[in-house]
Image 1 (tube, one colour):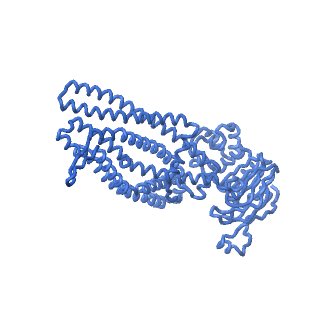
Image 2 (tube, rainbow, N blue to C red):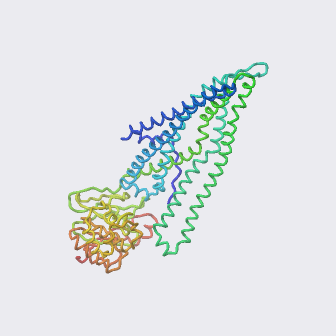
Image 3 (cartoon, rainbow, N blue to C red):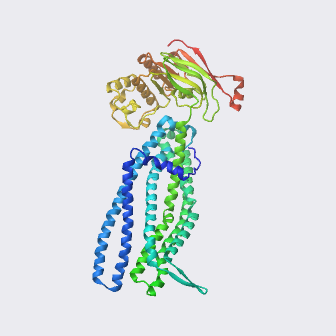
Length: 590
């Protein structure tokens, strides 16, 4: 895996990620849910205001020993508490519903964009974004949940501040003191104490906690890389076991986990410093309003109920002003996810809109036409000189040449998934092309679904599937069509290649491309499969990449990748000059 560079995002980029859902086809339902959640959040603030007034009346009743007033306030508290509980429950419930709707919509959008125009393939080729699975599965989840939690928290903080700052201003009264020979009076002095207290705390937390953004960004990437390494061992368990590669795999996994451990310790140290500041701030805030309000209470300017109301109002104002302090850790994690999503979105957009140097179009000629197709590597270095040729109905073409010369890359260009190069490819409008790579993809699920892929599971009749399983020497799989398994792990490489031929015979393509599709088979099995294909698909064009000369007898034309100039081979390596060209020759008729 290749790590991507940390991406810095501004608020416009954040808005670009958030906006689409709220203007989508689900916008009215989404906005309705959001309005309900906001109404409930504002309702909770209003209830806090009522509780603040209750504090004053309740403690005044205690101070004056008024039993009837005391009972009245207990009943008042009961119904206020019941309403508060109901509002709090439904606020969480509707918020979670909105989170899931938003996440589901964004997941569908990102999957559509990632899979469109082979963007996923181009991203892997260029390594422009690491761990797309983690970004779609985890970062999108945190974007939606974090955005709602933080934005609703900020809204509640603002409304709470507006609601309680007036209360605190009125109940705290003025503070007078002598400065030299002049008396200074500060109206609503508790408000200014709360503002100063929160401002100092916020600045301190920002200075201490700022590194958390990058640390959380790195932690998510390291965790994803470690999981990817574990999945790779599951995927290639047999190969690792045969190589006795456990020591090497252990070393690689230890190295990846060591990055997690080191970065986690950095997060721990930053979090410890952050917690020292925030806990001191939170604990001192409990007694701070009593310290600054006590002189007026003991002077008789305010009652006990008034002091408790001041304490409650100060707590709400201070908590509202401290939203940044309390939410800083969540903000850091949210910002890291936003940065990763912004980078991923940019990579997907670039891959989807990347102009292909090799144009692929449809024609009515009845043949695949290659016109001056030059293959390049993703880094831009030329791989071949311009190639021109054609593949006509019924032709059998064998493509040979040394490893790394561009044979498989030519197939990718014909499939329209290799944008690096120049020239054009034309494909008959009605032609159905099928490419069988050396290792075919077998999705997890029933064997029937694996054979039918990419068609629907029930696209082919069981009798047809059974017939071709017999022809391709897989009779033991006929009774397992409804068995669900990870077939790429269950079947041997040879069985997987024979299963790919079953897929080809069922699909009946007009042009069949075989890229080392029989490399895991013995010569007799290879010969049997070629004979089955020629017999069952007599009109289909067949283009094969193979290193075994034995398959030449099933082809009529050879496309040989050769050095354009053998004497310049070393110079070509050094200068990046085109290294290979194709020479066509006739073979014995199949």
